[in-house]
Amino acid sequence: MTSAVIVDAVRTPVAKGKPGSAYSEIHAVDLHAHVLAALVERTGIDPVVVDDVISGAVGQVGEQSGNTARWALLGAGFPESVPGVTVDRQCGSSQQALHFAAQGVIAGAYDVAIASGVESMSRVPMGSQFLGKDFYGSKVSARYDNGLVFQGISAELIASKWDLSRAQLDEFAAESHQRAATAWKDGLFESQVAYVNDLRTDETIRPATTVESLAGLRPAFEDAASAARFPGIDWRVTAGNSSPINDGSAAILVTSEEAAARLGLTARARVHSFAVVGDDPVLMLTGIIPATQRVLSRAGLSIEDIDVFEVNEAFASVVLAWQQETGADLAKVNINGGAIAIGHPLGGSGARLMTTLLNNLEQTGGRYGLQVMCEAGGLANATIIERI
Image (cartoon, rainbow, N blue to C red; front, side, top):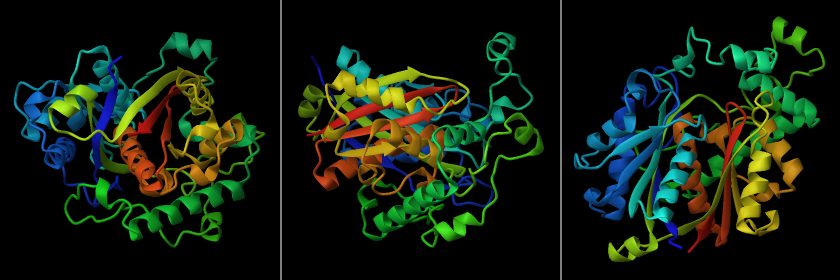
């Protein structure tokens, strides 16, 4: 069977997703085009051989609508003959783009594909596509007796169900900042970034973050209505132990092994196994638990076989609940920090995590890396790569 391999992966530094931040004057298409052009420059590939550009974006409205992948590849100078498509699996959109690219290669439909993603949350605020709209519909609302909630409440429900204390959440968050700050200081991100403007680090990393400073933050999702609806919750999820709002983009070059050899490219990792699952849409963010179990089963591997993990830090409670259920060694999880520090540019996060995972695997000399992401609606993607 044809194998899909990763030749290279690149990301922008992640910026704050608010007016006045590092990328707030950059159109989302231009930010996306930047990493596509960087991928071509780094690999020396002629973009005319790219069979498809599959990209993730969550806020598909305004500047990120109209199949933003197509405009980004044209903005990057690709020939008009190169197609592009934009997918939405919420926070896992660009991880799903990687799955689609790998599936196309394995099936023989593609020789060369790019999986990428972008989110400009400073210019397309989170939830812009939903404003003033009922996106559940009456049948879904009836099925769940109007019990569906937004992600912050789901994070609180998870913290409560897995009995995770405020101190545990804050300790995890502080460690994320320390790991990310150290990784930048030690030059561990240098080989994976394509700089934009003058930003030379991920803008939301706060090296001075401590458990004590985080302890002073108020719960982010507690209000009178929520407190009345969930009287048993000891509110503990804050802005400090949650991922911030961000801008960023990333791109991954995926080929068959034969195409890589023919084009003179060096394969860095094999896309070994992948899975996607659905789970409870109220708890919403727990899908990473069955997704991890499923991808390990498909790969014929155990949790102990994995050398490094990238688990998206949408909220500290999500990663810690996953760890309790899987038994993964936290020393191997997000070893250079996660989204709480680095940031979470929704549609770009899946590709950003894979870019980081690929480099972490090479830096540690490990064989297998596992990436998993929670997604709105009770979904999750999981991917295992094998270093070549």
